[in-house]
Length: 93
Image 1 (cartoon, helix red, strand yellow):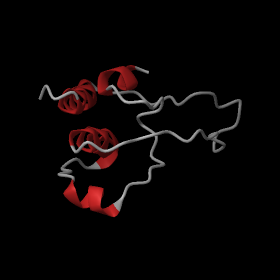
Image 2 (tube, one colour; image 1 turned 30 degrees about the vertical axis):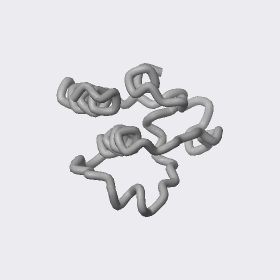
Image 3 (cartoon, one colour; image 1 turned 135 degrees about the vertical axis):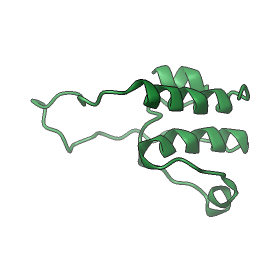
């Protein structure tokens, strides 16, 4: 939810890796990140380029109910990178 507010986009899961992009849009993007951060950089670039976006609901089935939520932790460096892209998406960076 934090990413949704920061990016000001009409989607609930900004870190979802299931995406579809038009090839012409992808070719115009200036992506520099490697690893997971590229997902949020891609959102910032799509917004910068004026792309429309929407979300198609899905259910993640790769984890069992006992596994619960992800236990992924974020370093300060990772959070700073995500925030930088959110600021770019808002036109502030």
